[in-house]
Amino acid sequence: MKKFLKIQAASSKPKYEQIIEGILAAIESGTLKRGQQLPSIAELADEQHLAKATVARSYDTLCEKGILMARHGKGFYVSKTSVKTPLNIFLLFDTFNQYKEILYRSFREALPAAAQCSIFFHHYNREVFDNLISDSAGKYTHYVIVPHFEEGISATLGRIPPEKLLVLDQYVPRLHARASNIYQPFEKDVLTALAAAKEDIRKYNRLHVILGRSHFQYIPSGILSGFRKFVKKEQIAHSIESDLLEDRITQGDAYLIFSDGDMIGFVKYAQARKLKIGRDIGMISYDDTPLKGVLLNGVSVISTDFQHMGKAAANAIVNREIVRIENPGSFIKRRTL
Image (cartoon, rainbow, N blue to C red; front, side):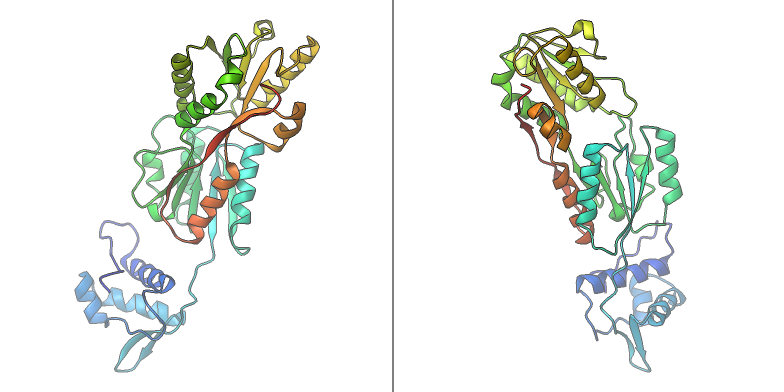
């Protein structure tokens, strides 16, 4: 029993519940098999420094559920190995847009049909983020969080049992060792993507980044640091602009645009001036969507693989794995550059 049952004395969870969860986890993993005898109440109490009444309560609960059976004078035995708890997943996204829909659909399709998902949005409001996590405590089997805040979130995430936590999209450096993280290495992805697009970028006089000021568009600092490292290394004329201003769009330049609204505005402006995007003026968008695959016969993008991220997240939950994964990203060359 010592090999797979570990009672956390400092945990707020009652010890009898920890025993129950430990036994269920051991049965699910195959460590405890059907017909196998468990330590006696006295043995387990002594081994884990617990009161006998605590162990007895755990065993009795599992007997009531039919998972254990008691044989008079002989002890307790595993009677049932089909003990998986139905998945009930709390999803907290930053916002909902086309590429988050791709992520969500991929995640949902890779889960068992019986899994339940409840989805919430914080829209970059830190108070909403903290309150939603606090209010959800103890109600779900797993918590999948897309934070996207530059300030520290470790204390808030610490309210979730680490083995039930999976943080998506954003790397969290001080995440608990037993929590999972599938993230975009933003700086690395931007450097790699722009390097792949280097020869096409050099056809233009300058490369501009258009940040946009939408409350529903988060731009991690790693993207900008990757951009700055690239233009410095390649000695490319550049600028970083807060807004897309029509009077500052210049023929012969290329633009890296984050907001879909800015992208549409850019296309309308180019068409009004009879500028051919991909020849007279260049455009790269961030985060791929099905629309960008057909708009203007294809918009060049820097993007992570959101389908891969969703599937990897679901697999980690289903297989009860702790993962730390850099999600793959790439530059997709199309007609606009």
